[in-house]
Image 1: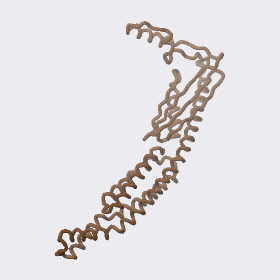
Image 2 (image 1 turned 45 degrees about the horizontal axis):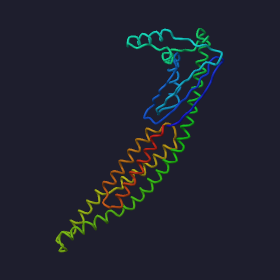
Image 3 (image 1 turned 30 degrees about the vertical axis):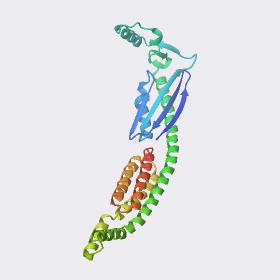
Image 4 (image 1 turned 90 degrees about the vertical axis):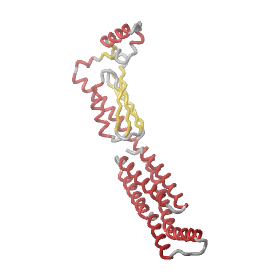
Length: 286
């Protein structure tokens, strides 16, 4: 969801430039910085952004300048007077050079201000430049998304490989449990026996059932297929992918907790690491 774009435009009296940036965000949050006198562009600009993006923290700045020799500057006397009064009320001596630097005190004297049609045409042109910047930002985000998809695909392949390694270890778990139980009984009875063989077999079977991770492995495989489907689907899949990562992690945790073999425990930890790395990348997906 990260990117940067810039678009410029102008007419016979004014030139303008839009800069738009985007970083990761759970929802869509647009922050607009508009020069004094152009606040009316805020609602339509937000509507343009909402049509293109579903997630991300977006910031956009509009800079408007007078074309040299074609526009004059005017003083916003009401604002300047209010600033002077505040300075005097605070017991400070107002300095004109500083007050003139306050945003909105110096404005562009526009001859089209009294011409609604000319003003509307200029606003449409400025918004068209904003749409151009948003399109460029969307392209930058898409390029980053393609790179992110490659990284996520690599993590999915790693998770799939670890899942199959875990399956091999899981197949050996019942035998390992039975052998370990037999050794423990041998140690407790000091080799004299004395425990019913059928009861020992029942206990071993019960332990094997509790340690059975085949269901978790099947779910991990299913989540992998769903994740690849989301990547192929494209569009705004970030929220669903983030939820799917939580499901991946839940199965990896359960697998590790059920493990009765060191090798399976290590695989479970490797699975969790790969899933966490994938989830970090998923935060970049819209």
